[in-house]
Image: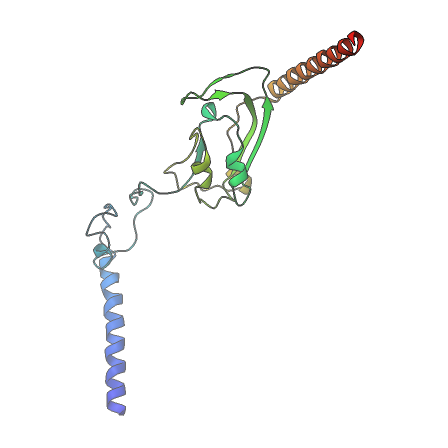
Length: 197
C-alpha cells in the first residue's frame, strides 16, 4: 500500500511538473492572434504561451462584442428610452423642447427636442447592450474599444451633448416665451368666448 501511494504521488507530481515545464519553455514563443472562429484557437493554449504582448499584440475582437458605448448625437431624438431601460442608471439625459422641428436624423425621424445633457458613466455600465436595442434611431452603439484606462473615476463619464450653457439657457427662454404666448392666446380666446355668450 505504501509503495502504491508513493508511486501515485510521484506520478501526480511528475505530471504537474511536466505541465509547468512545458509552459515555462513555451513562454519564449509569441502567441499568434487568430480568429475565435479558427479551429486552432483553443489548441494554441496547449502549445506555447498563454499571454500576449499587449499593446503591440492584441487578440481579435468578436463581431458581436459589447464594449465602449458611443452616441451619434446628430441622430439622437432624445426619446430617453435608453436611460429608462438602463438597469444601473448610467445614462443621464436632459432634454429641452424646441419651438419647431430642428432637423432630421439619418433615418428620416424628425427631431423636436434638444439634448442639453447626454452623459454615460462607463464606470457603472454593465455592458448589457439594452440601450442599443431600444434606440429607435440606432444612434447609441457599442464600439470595439475595450481598453479605456483612466486615472480618475470621473474620467469614465462621457458627455455627448454639444450644447453650451449659453445655448441651453437661450433655448429654455425660447420655449418659455412660446408657452407664455400660447397661454395668453388661450386665455384671450376663453374671454372672447365668454364675452360673446
